[in-house]
Image (cartoon, rainbow, N blue to C red; front, side, top):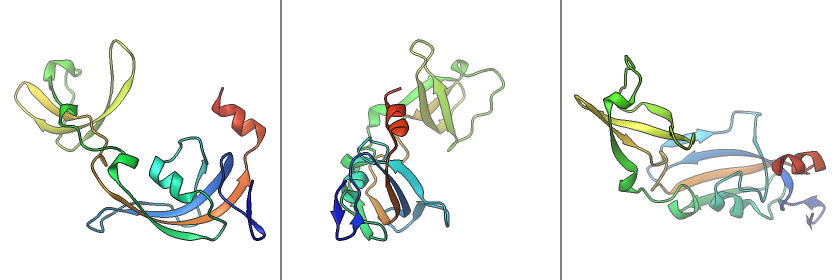
Length: 161
């Protein structure tokens, strides 16, 4: 744990609480922390996107910063190979799919769950986008460190449980 003057700073294994606002290049707000309810995470354990976590390192309680995160350090670039067509027959009978809807699909073989967005519903097939919704986007964060504390041994052990 390092200190900056009298205050502790964001380091690995610290529980960090941030107030934040997330916008895109065009200024559209995508997300923000609720008033009085900062987002809490364990620093140094990949619980935030890489670019944001790196920018917070060394900040102290009350510090504010504007952070711009390129796609490579956020959700990656869009990959057109992640846009795929599935037959309507692959979905349960009677399910109503609508364009723009986000679905959670489970791979029948691996059991892995994937998030996908319905791009288009055709007569006998569905066009799906498996890219993260923010893939390819440059993200702009306005952040403030709300609180900091050393993680407990229990919190650290839970990561490896």
